[in-house]
Image 1: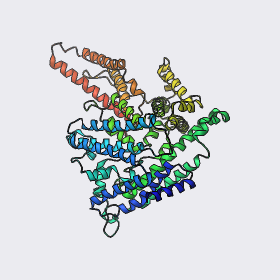
Image 2: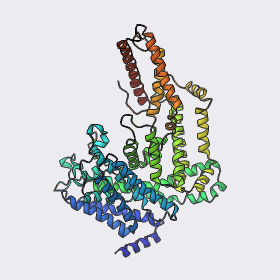
Image 3: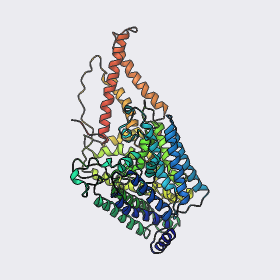
Image 4: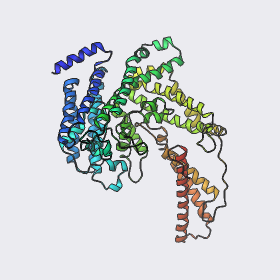
Length: 604
């Protein structure tokens, strides 16, 4: 049987212009549709049969199609190790022990592939499936941990996914080896799988919309599944034909430099970067379509339209990425479940509960994301350059965007369309440059690809930092602000005796704005932090902020001449007034900043 299947795959390889690894993964993805069609028709209450079915289909993929016997052992070691750690290690450090075990095992395979095996992109690499499993199982460890914590201490996201009881081995293995997401994802939490298997995920489906005479729990999803699958085939068609027009081999051969000028090359890298993404668009769209057909993609009923939402496991938004006008929008549209994992199970978990996320959380998330992807130099070249690019984008947005807005800071001027066009091309061309090492992987070849465009993005970043962080920064910013429409001045009323005067209020606002800028601008996605986060480590800045607040306090207290040094109640009253004023300023400035950045709707 297995020989027959492998012979059929070999014949297809001779017909289709596609390598063995991609063909086998595509076959598994397509077979998931008939398997999902059958899964929906299993008895709703036969939970054991559903789990066994999931495991059996995945076993068929591994043994019959992929021929990955050693790869199966890798996944079993990972999943069984996690199961016993989370079940029997009953300490507060359990999720971190589990995380280190999973990441350590992944790192071992990454290093082995890089230094002890010859890399062949046409052969299936089990580390792809292992990376998906690391996300699922590290999240599982935190879900078990959260189930033993006071609910009040958990975030809403954690409360929805916490597990009060450790699952038995069969449903756990069914979760690990869910066939529709085994190889390429999407990753999702055990709580979603448990609701899916027990059909409680579909409790809010109206009775009149339940299919069949038996009123099956899982609603019809064929149309939405077909829509996603057709999108996948569209991307597959583009991917299959893209090599006729652009290829990495053409760049590495030196012909691009020999035959074309600089401007042609930077546009060539843009299109080449798009062709790299097509493979992921294809497989992720088809995998999502399979998940939708099985039912696990169900995400409730849209209260406005009354239609079902099928985006629970959405992993990519190609339209948002390809039309993105800044780095953050593009990264948030890419590998979306990895973003959720990094945020909820790494970034927020490393933070102290009394302080919230800070520099340590950002740097740890950055390291985790980079190491999770692999140990090859190309990953780190792309990640580090992406971090600088985020910061540069924020610098330009902060200083240029207001020029194209009215005084209210929200209404666009007619000229803003030109700003948007420039932002689009700068963002997309830059991504075409940034992502090349992520595909090339080799250090020397990655640097060569960048050199074909004379390292233009690196030079642009250096120039930007010199202009906006160098000795002329204040003059440049002041000059740019002269082109901005300043909001109307507000009438300043005399300050009461027990309130901050205008000078003291200005000092406090300056310090608060500095701290808020650091807090709100920490918007790293996919583990790629803004370089501004690193700048927050500067102790001189922290000392200056404290010094400014201290000056405001001494001025405020000095005006309270009636307070003697030993008048404790008077000092306490003055201090309470002072801190209340700071809190009012903080809340006001934070709301204004959030509204200005589009992160919050303005209040009437």
